[in-house]
Each structure stands twice: as C-alpha cells, then as structure tokens.
Image (cartoon, rainbow, N blue to C red; front, side, top):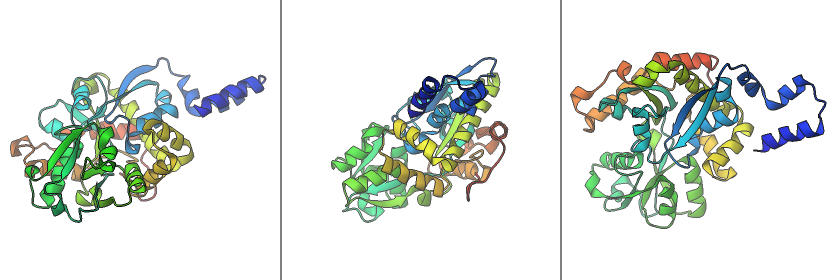
Length: 349
C-alpha cells in the first residue's frame, strides 16, 4: 500500500524522529490498537467476489485501522452469490459475520441482523436498447447471477411481477456475479441489475444500454444488505460483534467524509477504475445508500417482512416481529462505540 511505503520512507530518512512524531506518522487508529491486551479474531463475510463499491466497508475498516482500534484481528472472507449460498450458510454456522437476509431468519435460521450496511438498494436494472418498458422483458434473457434464489434472480422476478408477468415469462441465466457486466456487453444477457460503478462502465462501453428502473424507486423500503450473526455467536461473543459493527460504521462514515482516503482502498478491493468508483461514490453518498448509524428501522423491516408474505416467499405464520429479526440493542451499542449517532447531509439511518 502507498501509505506503508510512505511510513517506511519516513523511518529510513528521519531515523531520529521522536516517538510522538512516529506515532503520528503511523496513525491514531493503529496507535490505539497498541493498547489492546489481546487482538480478538473475527471473520467478516463479503457476499460478492470481488466486492461492489457498496460492500467495501470491511476493506475500509481494515485498511484504515478501525478493526485494530477495536482490538479485532479481522479476516475478510469473500463469497459469491449475494443472498444465496455459502455466505448465509457461513453466518448460520457461526463461522462469520455477514449478510443475513430477513428471509433466511423467517425460514428458521437461528440468527439476528445486527447492523444495516446499506438500508437502501443501490442498483439499477440495465437493459439493451430494444427494451423500452418492463413488458418488453417477456422472452428475454435475464441475469440470475449467483443462482436461483440469489439477489439478481429475486430482483428480476420482482420487475416481472411489476409488469404482471411471472418467472416463466423470461429466461434466467445463472452465472457468477462477476459475469453480470460482461454478459450484458457481449449480448449474452438482455437485462441485469448493476451497481452504480458497473452502470457507468456499461454505458461507457456500449452507449445503447440504458436504465430501465432504479431499484430504490421500485422498492423504496427494501433493505439491501444487513450484517447478521448466529444466535450462538451473539450469546457467546457479543462484545466482538458489537466492536466489529462499530468498526464498519466508522468505515461507512469515512466513505462519506474522507473520499481521498477511501478511494484507493475501494479501487483495490473492487478492481474497478477510478472514474467508475468516483461515480459510484457520488451515487451512494448522495442517495444515502450507506448507513451512518444502525441502518435499520422497525418500519422498513416490517414492510420487508410483509412483502415476503405477499409474494409468497414465506407463509403468513412465518412472519416475524421486528425484535425477532433485528437485535437493535446490539446495533445501538455499536453506534455508541463508533462515537454516537450522527447525521451526514440528509443521511441519518
């Protein structure tokens, strides 16, 4: 990393630096970590590999020393498939803290959401030039990146429903999440949900592509990504969970307040060029996609649970109360550890 090279150079060029000056050069967060009696290990899951810009709080927290400040030795594990597959399984088994959809909890997973990374949906549904309205998706090839049950499949079905169609009215193509943008550019796909940075790249490379619908407009109360933990982990290692969420809350706030620091970290993690990442940062921060506090609310959670019933994903008797889905006390404790509630611009979730 450039910062590490810079610190090394300082030590070589100015060997007589005082301890105070050296402490300043390595950063306040790392200095705080030196007071830890022990560094506690924790696995932090990221449900897309490589991550999209919206998923990068763990990488920011690690590179800027927020995990270390809270006495955590964080190991970031990248999964593939979003809301389906090994990411949720890892949370259920107590192997990691990661994305935990309310659907999984309603279907019996023994865990709770402990912090909302992104309480709003960041993506847009991008389609080829021939598709003008959602009804034009009939018979077209839609992305099911991550497989059936994954986020792309779920949202594709949702767009079809809004147009009065069913899953069977289109062809879903299963693929890895990294194949979404290439599939659209090469003509293998007619429609796919893309994150802001990929919308930018898609339109730059193939001008005929356009946004059919913004997810945040289609489903304004739909929570995009909520970190969760198994009940056994919350019971046994609650302090670790609180501190891990506090570190990532600080990371989200840094993304709003200190673009110069987070930009190179996000570029490295996502493997995306600077112009695309800068575009995505604008979209995410201006639209309050990232949380700055708990990232959860009873109203949004209740709406999401009711929607699961209405679309048939769960039976009415499986519907859960907010307290059964979200450990709000843990989330609030994490916010307190991060310095208390804040409002950044119009963003206060």
